[in-house]
Image 1 (cartoon, helix red, strand yellow):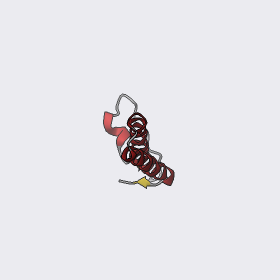
Image 2 (spheres, one colour):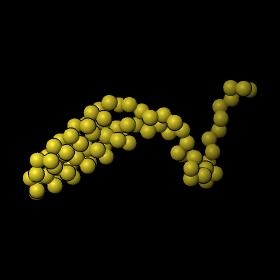
Image 3 (cartoon, one colour):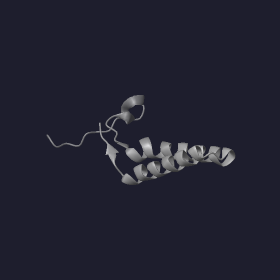
Image 4 (cartoon, one colour):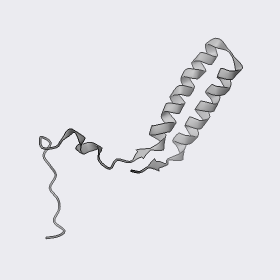
Length: 77
């Protein structure tokens, strides 16, 4: 019976770390969303301060975050 299906562990037998093995992390989640979040916060700072550097930084962070999130790439273990 080499191809017998493996039985799943009961929830009370699982350890806390069983759910984190061999996960693939998407670049959109790992890099894109934080960059967009930082871009939004810098944009709010640029709205209140008005300096050109903050506007350029905010737009750059938002664009890089959007491109990274739209890439759909995956980092595998």
